[in-house]
Amino acid sequence: MEKLFELIKNKPELYKQSKNIWEDSHISKGMLEAHLDTEFEGATRKLEIVEKSIDWISSIAPSKTYHKLLDLGCGPGIYCERFKNQGYEVVGIDISKRSIDYAKDSAIKQNLNIHYIHGDYTNHEFDEKMDLVTMIYCDFGVLAPDIRVNLLKKVLHVLDEGGVFIFDVFTKEQYTNKPEFKKWSFNESGFWCEKDHLLLHAFYRYEKESTFLNEYIIVQEENKNIESYMVWEHVFTEEEIRNDLLKAGFSSCTFYNELCGELYTGKGNTMAIVARK
Image (cartoon, rainbow, N blue to C red; front, side, top):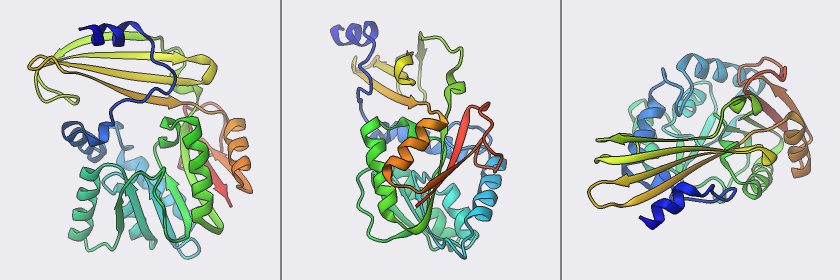
C-alpha cells in the first residue's frame, strides 16, 4: 500500500524508467494485436497511410539506388513486407520477440526473404552498411535524450556514403490543450492485465523539457501486485531536429508534415524528416 501511495502522489522524475512492456507476455500480445489492426491508429497507422508512406519513400529513395534498407522498430513487419515488395533488401529489428516471431512466420508464408532481428536497436551492433534506414510512427521521441544522441550516431555509422535516414516525430501540437490528469478504472481483464485489476492512468506535462508522460499503474486483485509502466514522449521543433542531426554528422535534412510527401508547414501534430549522410 505504501508503494501505491508513493506512485500516486509523486510526479515521476523526468525519464524515470519502468518495467519494459515488450517483455511482458500479456501486454506484448495486446501490442501485437494493436499493430495488426490497421484500421486503428494505436501501434500502426491506418493501412491507407501505410501504403502512401511506402509509395512516397520508394519515390524519394528508390530501391535501385538505395537497395539495402533497415527498419528500426519494425514490429510484426507491416512496413518491411511492403518495402520488400518494392524491391528493397530488407532488415527489420524489434525488441518484441512476439512481434518478430509473427513477422518471421508471415514472411515465410508469403515467400519473402526478409532478415528479422530480435533485439534493441539502440544498442544492437549492425554488421553491414545500409543505404536507407527508416524509423516509423514517432519512435524517436520515446527515447531519453542521451539515447537519442547515441542512436543518431549509430544510424550515421550504419549508413553507407550518401545514405538516407527517414523518420517521424510528434510536434507540440500533439499535446496542445491537454491537461494533466489521473483516472481510475476497474477492469476484469484488459490490455495491461488479463486478471481483475485497478488501473490508474496518469498524464503529466514537463513543459520546460517539451516532454510528456503517460503512466499506467496496475493493481492486481488476486495478489495485490503493483506495476507501473511509463511511456515517455518528447515533442520536437524543426530547429531542434536540425541541430541534433547536423551535430551527429548528417549533411542535410528536409522536413515534411508526415511520411507522405507534403512539405512541412508547422501546423500538424507530426513532422517527418529525411536526413542525408
